[in-house]
Length: 310
Ligand code: 13P
Ligand code: SF4
Image (tube, rainbow, N blue to C red; front, side, top):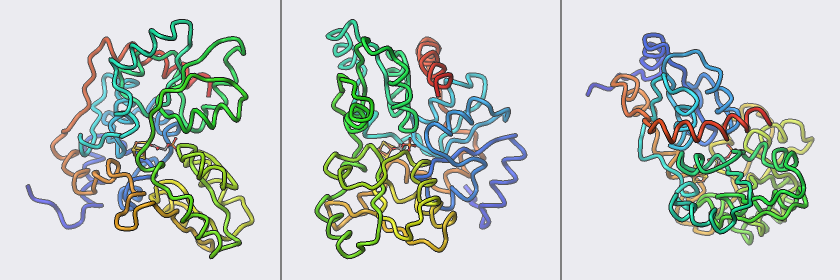
């Protein structure tokens, strides 16, 4: 198929034609971030998906995010530029195994991080994101036992913040577990003034060095309000594009991964989306997200609960 030279203009034209909105996560390529109508973290994106009146949602993110948009908008066309844009964290929680885990903890309420499949959401009582996990757990009565899935690192962080004992599913994100504590310490020695800011999906060995821990949106806000001029950023480096725009005079250093020979701190799933694939998805109105109605309805309830509790 013909790919126009000026993809920005072509995508903007298709947006008008389709009455489409482009929602993008901070971990997308800078070009995609620049063309998005709304850019945000997982909570912000699901809030936007819940309120958009566009007919078509083009989701520049990963599968579970586009799936959440479709769960909230069954009558809209939801496009994901590359259907293979999955998530290692969502994959770490297969539905059959999770069903057995739930059965082994029958009296527990299930709070699931939004980074999971629609099947896992359908088995959950409340969904949360990294922005609201602490707030949501704090709203659940003290005596209620809770399963927290699938991210063990976010789960552990929420346990520390709330003083609650959660039963954790042992999942993790390949991007956030790849940061090297040793190299971050070395970097800090080279940049003694820098503040370390980290996403709660990082391992405890990294989080314990962090001056500030938060979701991608929280990290972006923090580096704007902090008086500090230099930051070591322990999350997917896509966010640095927005940090540099928001605070051009400040210096942002991506936290190094254990392996020197790859861009391991870039999410391989998020980065499958390209401007070209985004254009083709809009042009061809495919690939689209489709969810069986029984799963959609079951997954909708815990998402609505999250939106009400946020
Ligand atoms: P937030 O969007 O909640 O910051 O989570 C980051 C992430 O890993 C998304 O896949
Ligand atoms: Fe999943 Fe991690 Fe990529 Fe986020 S950064 S989409 S949690 S693999």
